[in-house]
Amino acid sequence: VITHPSRSLPLRPMPPLSYAKWDAMEFDDEDDDAPHKPRVTKLNGPATITIGPDPAARSARTPTTPGIDYSHWDRMELSDDDEVDEEDEAEDDGVDNTGAGRRIVPVEPQGDAQLRPRVCTESEYDEAEAEAAAEARETDHLDASELAHLRQVYAARGMPLPSPADDPATAATSDDQKHAALAAMLSRNGADRGDFIWRQNEREVEIAVLVPAGTRAKDLAPELLAATLESKQRFVLGTRGAAPQRLFERVLAYPVEQPDDDNDLSWEVTDFEPKNGRRVLRLTLSKKALHGVIIWWTRAFDGEPELDPLSAFPDRRHAGKAADHQAVWQQAQQMFKESVAARVPQQIAVSSLDCE
Image (tube, rainbow, N blue to C red; front, side, top):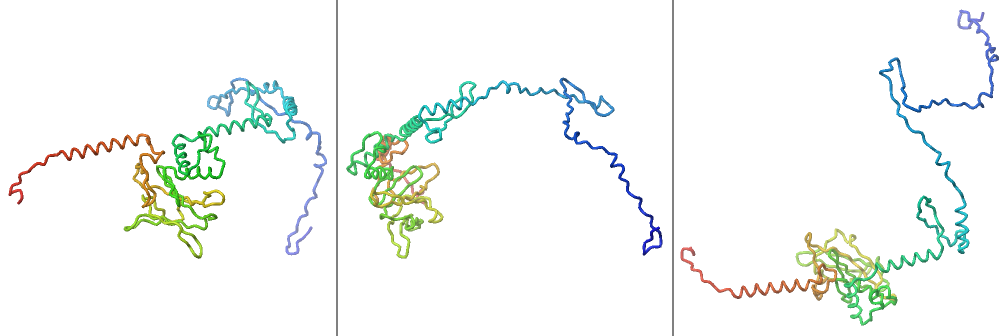
């Protein structure tokens, strides 16, 4: 009997553990290595699954699904001979098979053939580039109005029109010819005034102010002063730095959209004259007009000679009919003046009562 020091009750000893049952167990490693074949029940037709004791209430009809037929994969023939033949063909054409001088292009499949890449030779690639360049030249031709305007600019500068006449942009190789083409572009629907050039379309006006050679954008500070009761909008161009200078200042002839801040102005500085000559600050302004109304400016600033609205705007809609419209308007005005002049004065009797 074993007694605890703090208790007077005796403690019973634990019975010894018996490991005999472990010795009687048999373990075989071959059972783990043996493959286990799953049991699969194949339903070839309609079948009924019964769950629970009531077959009528718990029966479901399982639809039949056709099995996947993989036999067509077995009939496919895959071979690497095609790739070998293509490499041999490339070697015969003088193409380096290491990758230099080769370009991979897709080949359109014919019939049941699979889409796969083909090696494009240098001659084929050069031919494709030549076709693309020819197509680009066809889409870059000047229309009749642009060509006529360019001829006027060349004639004003005493320069012959480059050849071919139908595509002067591609033939303008010299610096002077490129300069004349740029001046023609900047004066489209506008005019070249010497110290500034302006052009326009239906919605916007671009004013190009000439600045000294070597001028950078960070050296300039363009401003568009808002209109007041005494004056219209004014464009001012000055320089930045410790000693700022005012290079250009003019009053706009027509109203434009006033930005909230000068930082919202859209402008850039680009080259203009060849051989490190003067540059231009190109400022783009939005015309201010009623909705649906198109106004073609006859001048950009006050004091500037006005353009002829009948012939100076090649991009104007129905520009060819402008003269006819003007003739009809003048005829209507003349008829109105003649009608007013032919009126006979009539006397109206006014009584003293009417005067009171």
